[in-house]
Image (cartoon, rainbow over the protein chains, first blue to last red):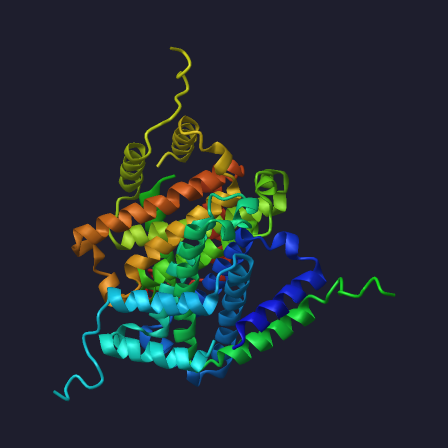
Length: 112
Length: 112
Length: 112
Length: 112
């Protein structure tokens, strides 16, 4: 996924609709959490096991894809408006997590 | 951003820590909305104007980058577990939005 | 508001519909945050000033009342299922907040 | 729980700290969903069964009580700022739900 191209496309999309004044980072964060709630709604009454079988239910899977896309589109716009380099932020965060949670197991830990 | 590579990396990360049994789509959706809330927290008491100037405050910008990354990492894992093609879903959703909200303005709408 | 009576009423409501197996605290927490997102949606594109004038727009006010009620109903059920005394918890939390954030001003601070 | 008394107490609490200008309904809604996320965090990695046994873990139960209180306090303030009668809204919403989801079972449905 070409994030800068996606951000440029979304910027154009907003400009063509006169939405820029509304799309402050504050408002985009609100819109993002609204969509996050809609994603959670898909899973709210499922058992954990049912949630692992969404790929077998095409209509649920498609709905999920739409909600994931909605959250992602707002995330990408927040990053764009606030000058956050998304790929670098993800890389950095995974590194921080790796230090915070050292691995218990490694694929070859039994290889001795 | 190479999403399949990121998903493979995150799968390995979870495997090395024995986290897979906990990372059902249901639980990942909960974790995602928790992080979405932490992202909203950054902006909750800001005016809309202040929220547009986050790029001028490096420590806020870095915090924001971490929260965006946290949400994104969970989104990417939900898509992976549920067989959602993230790039295709985003593309499809922007197309749906374009039809739902036809443009009012175009860059050259005044060109006659 | 008589919380124990409301909790009894909601327990009966769930029993009459066979919903108890689904209403684990985990699922109720998910449902609660979904409704919280719907409440946020009402305000997402409003300016802060517009949000202070919701009382002048009866249909928005009524919609808001419904979303507040949805969140509250789930909160009250979570408290019920988990043995949390809601009134005591609120009282305790306001006390903690009062210590965490000592008052800067008091109504009679200028009275000398 | 005496909601109008709680609202008066919270209004005084805000006034004494000079917080009113920040506590627009928009900002309170954001703060509410942030706390809703913190409540969800308690349950995110629990199995549904574990979530039903929170009452057996006093420290988790107390933490939960704090998060429930945080969400409730913001809900009550949003209702206050927007002129929503909380008790009436809850009553009305339960009535709407009762019509939307007619009971399948009643306590004496087997009494025939």
